Image (tube, rainbow, N blue to C red; front, side, top):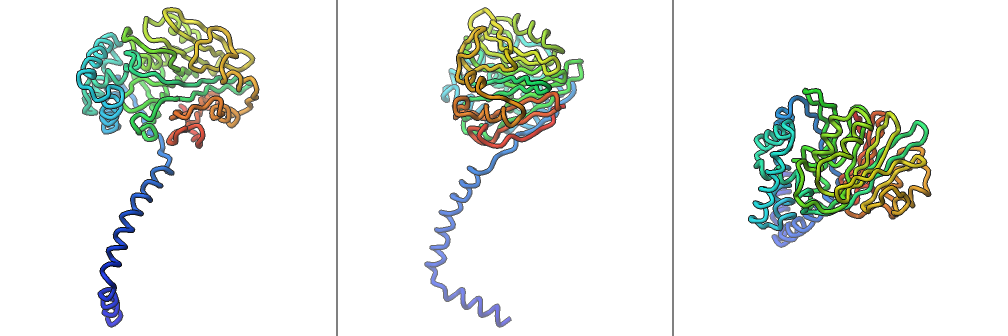
Length: 363
């Protein structure tokens, strides 16, 4: 008891200014500590496993990611892409709803239930899934396919922007098991996208998207959803190849297609109404954001590929983070290794490929 009284007396004798100084120091240091933690922390991607009908998958998707969907629609779509202009947003959403009307029913159902369960408006989600096709953003990517004996790898750098500062926190790995006979897929996307930028199906058919030019709003199917549809309905390279070559009118694109079971791979470029195919050569295939036609070797990515031998995951990681390949806006980097039922994903830092690649199971 005497000891406790002595401590109280001691505290009372400390000048009040010392308490004030301590409080000021704490108020200054705490934000710095929080900032340091924010900068050093590497967020883990969100993993979602969805199954059932389009409606059921959309409902679960919205319930799991509703807050992030609404945040992205507000910060990135409204303030970022539309500059906070309400009239512009409404006009673009109206165009997006027309595109939505042309979707296959299973994707319409999924988008509709996603809106209902997430608290986001259908027109906002429709626009979020088609803003590239409408022509409101332009960014770059890099894709690579490697075939070396039993090794078959499909890699992709998504070089975008900061997504209103949320890029580190919003990468999603979405596994879908439709109940209507469509193939199972693993898709890399962001909350609110029912399609994706990279997708692989249970047969080993993988697709990656690189933007080649600006869309003009003339399309019946957004590019993100198109990639997923092709993956869900294509059991082979030939099936997907036919779909890509005969896609309906829409934005320019570069699509990298590979089939891990057969070892086939090609890059498809659409600049206007014609789709040009460039096949894998000498076990290597690369695509940047410049039209090459059937001729390889034009880009810095091609030059790096020509100088490197890839015998495993580590070597391909080194290529994807090479200073002649990697863009500072890279927000995720993925490598599909279907033959070993795994993929590797670098995310949570920018540029992501400079960081650690985490290993995930595919199917």
